[in-house]
View 1 (spheres, rainbow, N blue to C red):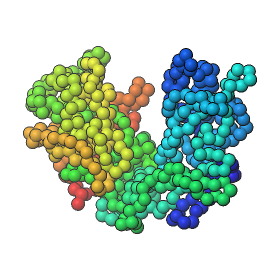
View 2: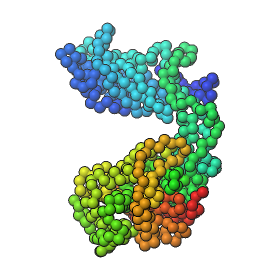
View 3: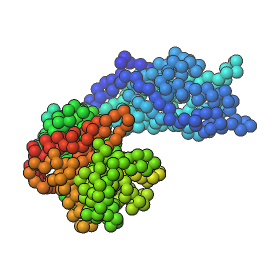
View 4: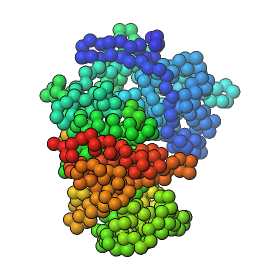
Length: 544
């Protein structure tokens, strides 16, 4: 971008290691103050001696136009439209600002020069670095015809922007350290495509992540006058050049990437983690380069959630595996619920209900649990809904108290407003078969702020038996030919009337728990089953 009078063009600075100035394409501001800019609210409240409503309306309109990126319209509300348009454009583009928030910051005041000053706080997100927050004032002047306009001056954009000083954005070009697996094997986006979007964050975690600054400079000399905002932490000299070791296993990660090829081109994701400590061995997504649905996705977990529901029922002694819990085709609770392919199992035991994933049987037991009890069990024993810190961004699950009986029925089978993802369900599986929750982790040294209680041994024994029977005699027979004592649970989760169901499968073998979801996979065994089978066929029965 050519040099402008309002921000500098890019330049490389020598004294600091690998620092350069950056100019970016134009961005669109987003106003976040909502009605606080309307007449009668925030800084525009009017008493007997308050500001002219026409003035406050013009201020509101100017801020709204600026926020929405309607720069010609915003500039037209000023006393110098040409200059205003150029400054607003170059300020946001040159400093790489995206979607800031503008909020009221005080009362409207009349200045000595006759203008009305509307104070506001600007929160300007600098792309890839952080948010630059400052306060400024929007001056309005009454015109000869009685209308009001923004009295244009550079300082309204930022108090220190002037004819003699402007701003420059600088970013540090830091060489990120190598990222390795748990055994020291180098991990790359080329060799492990699902990790490509995560490697920069994992590597940056060793030295505080991206760094940069917004600096005020002298227009004539280009020298820095002051640093307005600094982003990122200084690197730890003791860690310089040292690789970042993760909990991942290159063998498992490669096998996971290949296994998702069995999803027939559908969006899918997979997480494998160690049962005894929660360390993530593999995290894969298809497509590989996009959203990390494995750890940040929000899905209804469907019948895999019956592991948690069964835990709640078994903890309370409300049911035992050999108790008869009938499994009809349909059950109406505000709406009609049914089983996959409208199957039925008259006179079934609870074990049969679990292994065949009978929705109606589980829903019929909803009265055994208090309205908030399922969510409390999920949080207390499985850590779901607590704040996890695993080394990368995550969504940590939600099990709201149901609003009515229909929603309570849905939550018993992992539908309604219950939300999870493969990371959560792999962890749920690990907790169920070990009795103890271990917060998952991808990097060492993450703060574990979760507080959970262990499941009683009798409940763990019952859950392991139910999951083993699902492989030998139930809906997870697709895994029955694999070596090792595998336990599993399938899941089919409704999405909408216009989409096929998502397919789920969770399993454990030895010291590993795995969860797979295939979007619009129709059934868990049919879609997630081949993915799970491929993975477990390609890796050792137990990781070292």
